[in-house]
Image (cartoon, rainbow, N blue to C red; front, side, top):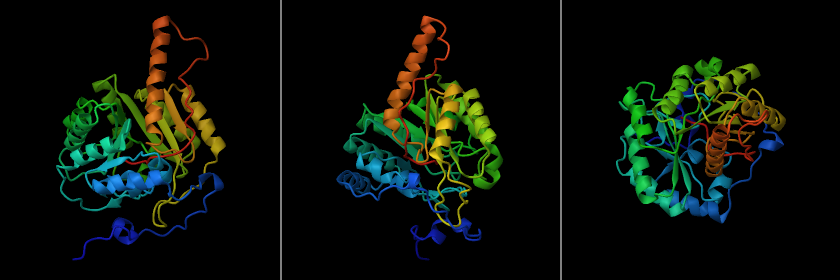
Length: 343
């Protein structure tokens, strides 16, 4: 049997072969991005290829790939390029993954060091075929990066470890990443259609439990809009995340990868994102990034610096007494794109 060609949609997403096609809507001007052509982009791509790594930037079709790679920033995707889930929004290939590569953590660390990253985001496919969901592979990757690039701060964007014992999450948290990220992706009412292999309240509890295990850990989550959700449901997700003590929220526009993926219900205008960001800040998040092109790891390094500053400011206010009326988390200048919703 010939190997799968993951550049062909029918082979990349066999589980969607029987889904009806939905023509993709024309993107509005505020979503258009330029094709990647810079020298920085080519240099980043060469390092990724040299170390035989997958990135979520490529695999999930992130619209910000050119900008981020042009600055030498890439989001590493470990444990292969084939996911065991078949979410209707995601462009990562689905099917039966190959065995884990024990040398992959070292190659990730080598690429991080060569790129000179101050902050790196490491994500993965879902690996429901593994007893620990790949948690130990995350641990090895974190340790390898700490060894090769000790000054680099590490953000992990993890799967939900839905079928795993509690020890899986505990191992990742014990490895002391700087940021623990897990995306809710959408509102709970759309889970059966958009994220059928996941459970909303399990994902929410995962984030809450991570903070309980290590209260110093920054926690982060993201959702997409434009999938057909109603605004009150989005606001409820914000409340749920704050109840779980999540620090950082990202909100971006869903973009349909192929005609057989979930359709775009609407393109949310930038002004609506500004309103969502203001409401999220009012609910107490330390950081919020909300715009049409926002993705989980867009400007993650700069945002991490602001996240630390916001926490320090909040702690200083507490030490000095009650915060003055109207004060809130430090504002973010993050108004744009990157990364990709996955995990």
